[in-house]
Length: 515
Image (cartoon, rainbow, N blue to C red):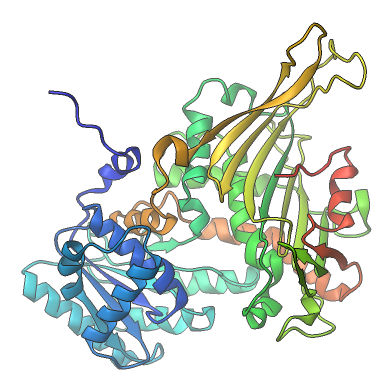
């Protein structure tokens, strides 16, 4: 009999079967993230048979609603946002186990009611349940939720057993080093580190995980993954949208907090880390922390070659053929705001592998297009045998990981143009996930929720890791706060950013690659 052909992504997830009976509790059940990502993720896991047989979902929020109303809310979210159409059979199994508990986040009695509901479910099925608490709320209520999980005894349920309770906490994890340290202290008062899953959804993206596979499963890459062959690295996380209706949040955050400190720093760590001794969570996270600790403190004074940072705000411009206003004209934004909508950084890593190799990071809103990528730019050949005039273009080899929107990877090589003369031209070798594996791939939150259920922290951020990241970023915020609007550049909406961002690379004879 021919071997059964299985979808490669589901095959990769098959090892996760065997999660203990679980109840997932979502704090912030009425929020946008819950509707767009979390409920569809849980539904798709159920569709793929990756949830335990005894599984429950409890929404927790301030508004008192019956279970049936929350079940309808969940069904509507699945119909609108799931990557799959709703299956009546799958939903018929999941709906009766989709429940709701109401109460305030600072109300211990509400957490006692939640505990009683979970205990009642255990009696109903005749076995113990692992509790996975997902904190999907504004950061202002992180602390009371954590405190009441501790005070109610929910945090310590089956502690140090296979089905101990766990907590997923959304970003932003603090707004500076001091607040991140305080939040870590709050967490470790009631949870041990193995119970805590600090989430960054970028780590659940297929191409981000594929970065480690490409590095450590292919013998051709790792021997040249160092200063001897790599000239520099560019990491871009660009958004075409502006702040939209999030001005209140964005005025307090800015690009550096919103995107650089978490997403792009994680991409840097995975790109630059040493090979771990194994792919278990602690081995991988140990190597990421080592990279962050090896980063040299950034130079903040001056400009051009003297500074390692640039910041800017978007101004008027054209996106998709439509005229758009600048950041200070957005509803809810101060007309004298100094909040950056673009940030670029130049890092140097003080270790043997990366000495002298600059890592450039940039992120911004209202840029030319939505794209996230890691570009590894290799050194030029030591001599140009084919440099016979302008017709010959010897381009540096570039390996680019496209994280979104078109997941895949490309390698730029030089090839001879057909003809009687020897002329060269850069050509691109492409691998796309959609064309190779099909477009209906699991969402990042599916992988991350599943990993948390089985206790695999590989794709989550450890406490010391987030603090080290803030140690690098907080001095920039403090410096910018002292400067006010001084040094704040501008760029046209729909462009690739400001001149100051280009100058970071030009100081080393480099230029941003257009993704």
